[in-house]
Every structure is written in C-alpha cells, then in structure tokens.
Length: 473
Image (cartoon, helix red, strand yellow):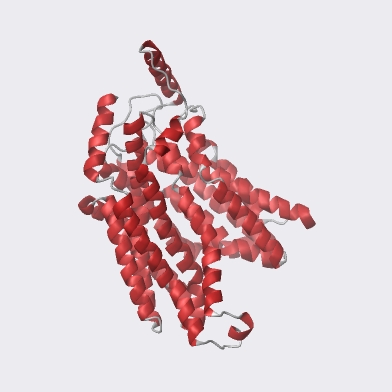
C-alpha cells in the first residue's frame, strides 16, 4: 500500500487515503454508540443497579474522562517515538486492547462494591485506551498534508465515514445485540457486542496505520534528527530551556478561540440529541418520530461531510464554520417558531445537523492549522498536544448535556407522574421546545462570534506559515 517503513517519505495524498481514511472512525462510531444508547440501560435493566449507583458510575466515569482529555496529546508529544513514528505507531499498538477492556464495561462481575469498581475501572481504562489512538489518528492528518486543501480532503473523508457509521449503526447495532442475545444470552449480549464493535474499530485503525505508511518519520529517523538538531544548537550556543509544550499554548491565541468556539457545536449536538425524545414524546405526542428524525439528520450528515470539502475550498474551513454556525442559529430559531408542527421541526433541526456535521468535518483541519502556526512561532512540533485539545470541548459537551437537559426540564415544570398520565401543559411543551432549539441556537450564535473575532487564522496566513516551515526543513 506504500513504501516500506524507513523508505522515502511520500508526498501528496494517496488515493487510498482520499477514499478510505475514516474507516477506523466508521468502526469508532459503532463502538461509541453502544455506550451512547445502551450503557445506562445495561446498568439499570441488566446489571440491576439502583438509580443512585447508576448515577454514581456514569458521573465518575464521565468526569474522569473529561479531566484526562488534555493529557493524550501530551503523551504523544513527550514519549519517545516508537518504531513506526511518533503518532502512527499508536494506531497499531493500543487499539487491540480496547475490545477486552470495553467488554467489561458491559458485564457485571460479582456483586456489591466489587461489581461497581470493575465497571468504573473498565469504563475509564477503555476510554484511555481508545483516546490515545483517536488523537494520534487525527494528528496524522497534519503529518500527511502539505496544504490546507489536503488537510480538508482528509478531514472530509473522515467525516463521511463517521457519518456513514452513524447511519449504518441505526440498523446494524440493535440487530447485532439481538443476535448476541441468542448466542450468549441477554446478560452478556452487550459485552459481546461492545467487544465486536471495538474490534471493528481496531481493524479500521490498523487500515489507517497501513495507509499512512511513508508519511511520517520512523522512530529511529526522528531520534536521529532530534540528536542532530541538539548538536547543532549546542554548537551555536543555544539550548532549549524547557516548557516547549507550554510555550506552544501560550503563544497561540487562535487555539483558545477555536477550542471555545468548538464547544458550541457539542452543546448543540448533545443537548438536541438528548432532549429530542422528550420533544417527540410530549410535544409532538409521537415518540416513533424520534427514529425518523435520527435517520433524516444522519443522512443529511453524510451529505454535509461530502460537501464540506467543496465549501472549505470556496470559503476556507474557518469561514465555512462561521457560516454554518450562523445558518444553524437561523434554522433552530425557526424550529422554535414552528414547534407545534413536528415535521417542520424535523426538517429544520435536521438542517441544523447538516450544518453541524459540516463544522465537524472542518474541525481537524482547523486544529491542524493551529499546529502549523504553533510550529512557525516556536519551532517545536506540538501536533499531538494541539490535536488532542480538540477532545476537551467534546468532553465538556458530554458533561454539560445532563446539566442543561435537566435544567430545561426543571424550568419547563416536567413531572414524571403527570406526563405518564398523558397530561402536558403549554409551559412544558414550550420549555422542552426551547431546549431542543433556542438554547442550542444561542450556543452556536456565540460560537460564530467567537470564531469571527477569536480565530483570525486565515487561509493566506496558513499558506505563508506552511511555506516558511518548508524552507526551514
């Protein structure tokens, strides 16, 4: 599929990368959706934990996951590079551990405190084991790309496969759980499915490992280059004083702006997805429309992933995100104005998902731009650290989901005993609809403002910085 390791470095994006980069993320979507849709159900209905215990397990796991989100890029940039390169190596040495760790997240072993500890430990360790190659995977976008167009091409391909994963999961996921139930029984079916989908992710990341052959220095080549550069600095009487990674952050205001703006799309994504079932159950009074909404929005997401490359080429990735955020704000506000008409809401919120997926496709390319700016300013490659920071707004979005949805329901006067009797009030319907549309609209509108004033890293600037870095090399 490419030159042998240690051979001549490849230039230009290969055909296999253009078409198939993202197959690992296809598997990643399958793997994480098992947790999204079934983890709480497993804890309550299969493992039979009480609600306070379930809340404790999910809260501890999500908070620890969020707290560790910044560290994965640091690991990539500070550990000694392995045989196949600083980033590429992690695509093959870690993912194979994930199926075994992840399966125990969905298996109750023993009883009492021990069972709880095992599930929490499995949740935390499986997430660590998949987050490291996840960050390495998006870091390779920068390693393989020479131009903003190349970075956007890889980001778009990855987004297409991610979106396809969500679409196919809606059909395949529940079916696999049913098949596993027939083979290993209901109590073990979720663990078996988690193992199978995590293995699919690992196989996809191995495919990425092969596709990226020749695009990054091997470990031996990087170590030799670093030794040579250190010798040259000593000869000139210059030595680094440390804190190189910290300097990469403190001299990069664009990175802060991008990270904060990025949080907007995750607030929309997690809050709207989490409250959708409440809207269709208690406002539209047709719970079955939830599945229809998920399918339509997922299909539009595939289209957005494909079109994002064209949009970024015409407007730039930065401007595409700004325009997409503004469009999301408009259609979400319209969705609230028509909240009593379910099909209008489905169409408008699905359009918001279309534009949101477009921002997702642009995200890795923008973080890669920040990495280029950082290397231009400091002389140090901190790709892993910077690409890893893209995890932070995602994890904060997960934590904020429960807080914001609970707040919306409380403000709306949600009462389980009342609604189970089929009694809803105009206040409840309006409050749920605001959580589905207005709150996400406010978030993405603020995101657009932050991108306009806080991320002024334009395409012309990036091309200038990239050219300068090539001269230095």
